[in-house]
Image (cartoon, rainbow, N blue to C red; front, top):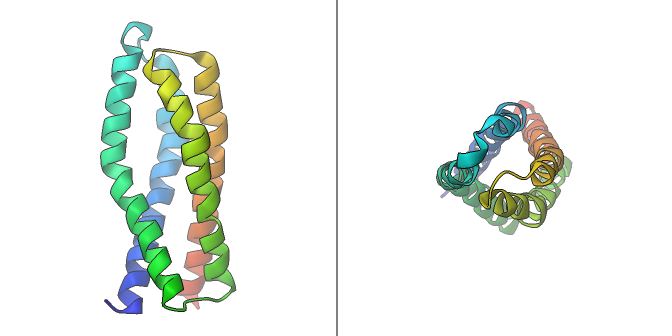
Length: 140
């Protein structure tokens, strides 16, 4: 696969995740507070399963194409800045969001929900900045 094709896939995955994360941050996570408490754990389970089905392939495409592009010698300020922002996305996902979701699987927990919404801004900011950095490369 050519470097251009890898870069196109990388950009598409990043741009898709940027859109998804903004929807989740502004719409979906806040609406979780309105889920019926008696069914919260069941709805949270469906959220985790369905969201994973959508975002896992995109996140894996994003990280794998990044690795291949770096191994292929792609560099430059905007690309490397964008690449560096993927580390906090993955760290935040596994150290902050996944534990909050695990707590919410047991049922409605206002503190876990607040942590989820607040800490998800890390991923929202990083994916947004990644998109802007990759967009700067495309504009050049």
